[in-house]
Image (cartoon, rainbow, N blue to C red; front, side, top):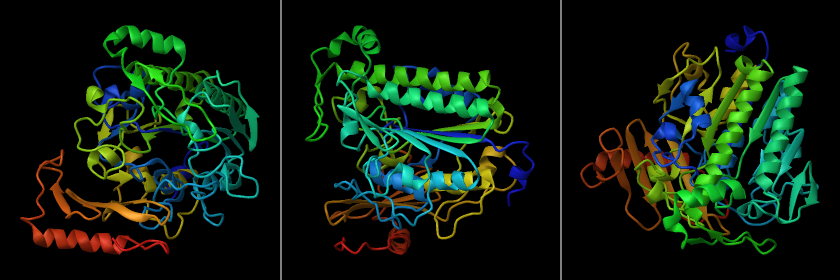
Length: 449
């Protein structure tokens, strides 16, 4: 099973960059025309672009839980954005993504928005208790709504900030330092960068924001408002259209810096870099996904299960292993990342997960195992009551929202989900309903849909 890894001279480094609320059409390599992302596009031109990759859910926390556990959201108990200090924390007994790397002898670092509980929670699950040697980022998911917080957390310790420091840049510098230190030492490393960009608020460093305000002066009267929770202020943003573009330019430059670092240290060909987004494009804080065509014309946005809410960019670059400039329509999802990296680093495949390794798709060698189906479940409220469910099986997509009839689409003929076939295909609807019923394991608190 691990013959490919055994033949490698060294264990490859892995960098996984997770954007926040970045839509399928937000990168120029996926068709974005109003701004350019040349550094991120390098991951496509020098690597592999996925066109059928999906996030773990349609909002942040449950999507990240799928990424970490390899369980789809019908099996993972985190199925919504849960409140409370540890309401969304991962179970201590679960083996999650960074722990797979630790078992293989990797240095592990995380930098950004954890989204699965407080990062400084003592005696409770946090990044350091789940396999990370070091972690720097926001204290909590709510505080990550502002890029100018009053504090951040480094290795479990909350440190004060002056409220005028753009914390994203501090976090990225920590990531750069981690890559440099481990790249120069020659020890294999896993670097996880769950950046907050481009989640609202639409804040960016002044030099970038001013540049884009001049480019889009017609939006100077537009004000972006967003809250960061009871403990943090989140100032309004003048011209959030410019703010979004500025955030993206800054992030793109930083990813370019990472790629340059890998070349300079001579570890470029021994480093797999992946880039994706935790869900589809959002409509908050003054962001206008229609203006940007952030969904790439796919129907829906963050918080719904149409394609625009869950289909995301996915890029993978590994010079010498992944053929440059290639594209795949392999049907994949966040739960596949864990078994993929387990195979890459020579760890046994975990039992009782839903993911399927896509290493064969990366290397182009062998026959790729495929999913019988992909399943999503989004829940709301204290009891995690089911709000929406979706299943994709081959070209077929079913979408079921609470108190509404099921919808059915043929994504090959109708990629934008314009023609609901449920009424004309009752047998197919029943097949999809059975998949939904089989994939859903009820939570103790849930009411019936």
